[in-house]
Amino acid sequence: MGGSGEVDRESFDAEASAVFRSTGDPAEGVHGPGSTTWRIARESVLFLGGGRAALLQLAHPYVAHAVAEHSETQTDPIGRFERTFRHVYAMIFGDLGHARRSSDRVRRIHETIEGTIDEHVGAFAPGDRYLANDATALLWVHATLIHTALQVYDAVVAPLSFADKDAYWRESKRFARLFGVPAADLPDSWTDFERWFASMLDSDLIAVGRPAKEIARFLLTPPRASAAPILGWYRLMTAGLMPRSLREPFGLRYTRRDALLFHSSLRTLRSTYPLLPRRLRDVPAYVEAQKRLAGDETPDQFGRTIEKLALRVVAPA
Image (tube, rainbow, N blue to C red):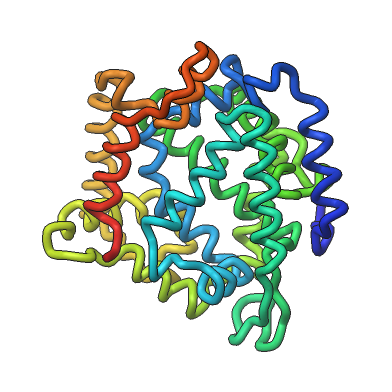
């Protein structure tokens, strides 16, 4: 499972088409309401792991250089977040038409993203070519989302059995193929996935270079004094959730006192989050999916408003 190099348009279309052909009710989309994916991905607390997933992605030099040179992360962070998750959630919770359009949109964007590495970092040297449609990089980005979602759900919402994790991973392979990840490159089971993920962390394909550090610093620096307490706490939680091997490269402090506060915060979240009303726990995309299946196509105005307010509290200006 060493990766298949560049994913060209023909390969991308073949993977996505195979997923679409295998779906059942078009209204239920790629996964559907009975899936482990909907049960887990509906939880808003998964965004607690957003910093971890982002930093893990940036630890792949292809991703870091692509984001630095082609993304609006540092000029329009809120807009980029909203656009990214609009496509992600369309593929998870949308009907088949929305999932297909978002998959195609991602393909067209990725086709325009390529360039050259400008530093010695891990296995890469100045002048090495990067591209967004590299199979291993695509799989790594997908893997960071899956691994982080299960880590946060297990820590805050409810313990997950091996069967839960295995089902989530196996279902997520359909989502990965909508990004063009070749089916042959996807680990078979949760056990295989964990082994592959650990091997990537130990490899020289994962290395924190200059653009990764710069973007991480931007994302985790309070945009205004009023945001300092919440973003400082979020930075601490990100450090606690990160693999130990990547904390120091990203400059994430994690002292013994930090560890105590991290675990105390998790205990508080575990005891309080499950008590929240479902209306506050469910992400808007899930609420809208349930409404759609009931024949109501109106947006979740309440959820979208809360989402925007939360983003504007902590997002860099």
